[in-house]
Image 1 (tube, rainbow, N blue to C red):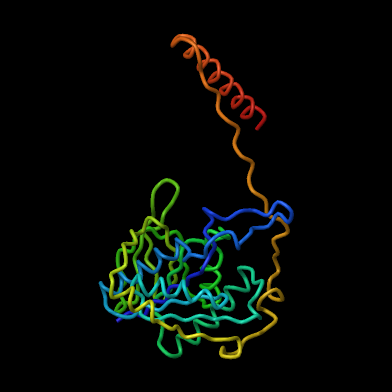
Image 2 (cartoon, one colour):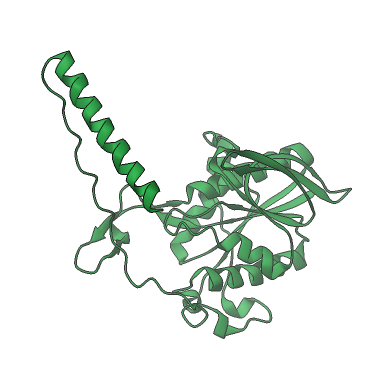
Length: 276
């Protein structure tokens, strides 16, 4: 029986979010909060592994009290239990401080029930760093398996996991000792619509909530802003791409203009290669 913990985060929907032109920061109030899409796939994969091998799926998040909604979404997907750490001491945490806080929570969970596998999304859509998962693995001294696109086997009895890890030109097959941590790609699975019983359970579900004082052996200098050596000095939207050229005239004229454009592009790239 496996005990799998999925680490999740509530994030603003970046499809809707706007930038504040005066402060050059994200206006988080302009977009609804959602479960990080990569994390939804992490939870779905944990649930699928539970169905294959038996066991329990827990989810863990750090955030303000409204992040309970993200945990309830995970219960809809099929998670069994939810844990949230929330405290003003966590505010302003970068990926280093976040991984430290989550590690302390994972250690507390593990004392109640040993953890066989931790699954994270590849990254969050509001940060795009992909650092928290590997940071947790480093602090727990367990193997991190990043960019996982397929889980072939998780064998608790023999103590190993076998996965396909995504590469730019294919994939590699990796076997790791348990416990370990996966950070998964979106393509690992499809998240289906939640069944009605799960939705009803999620609507009533109350997760376990811990403050800093509930965790053990915490160095408060490693939390929040105090524990964050990096800061985001400025955020700005990317420049909008320039509009394309509409080809006009007869078919012959359009072909001649297209060949002219392609030749200019070829000369431009050839010049860059020569300078390199």
